[in-house]
Length: 202
Image (cartoon, rainbow, N blue to C red; front, side, top):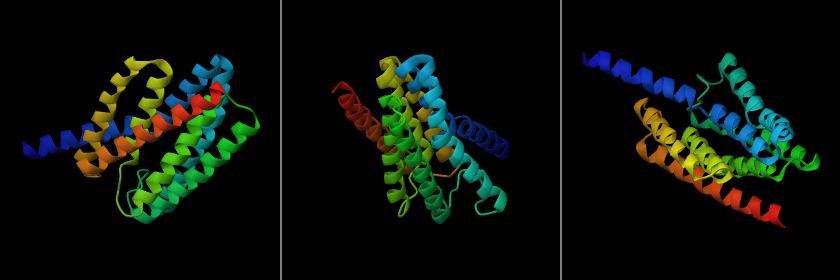
């Protein structure tokens, strides 16, 4: 009975991790910010941003899994994780430059700038400690969406809490690591949105 309960708990945690993994948060947030910035035209900009923020990094991670460079798409080992984070920074930085040059909505450029800063901090911390990237992206996304669409979206932090539980239940992270990731993601998102809004108002 105990073994069956552990397996059921693991399955729920695995499903939660899969549904709330970074690429899904990024897709919802980038397209949401694009729509908020300029409706249909903003969605097109959002799709462009999504290529650099999520699609290219996922292709890179998938290629590494197929080549046997890391065991799964979560990339838990420290050295491969740092390599993946560096690729994400390069891809996001390229997307940010492209959005600025092409005069995309400031909110989208600001979101990619937030991503770039967040990933840089996560890479620094990951060099010595396995902070949760999943939870950082989730908390940052909820914060950005709540700023854009209003306080009711803060209720989505319930999903962040579920993700925190899942990452700990799967023994991929400790409670301290998921909480640190969540706080870092939300804090950087709040600062990035405030700065971006200030530039947009000038």
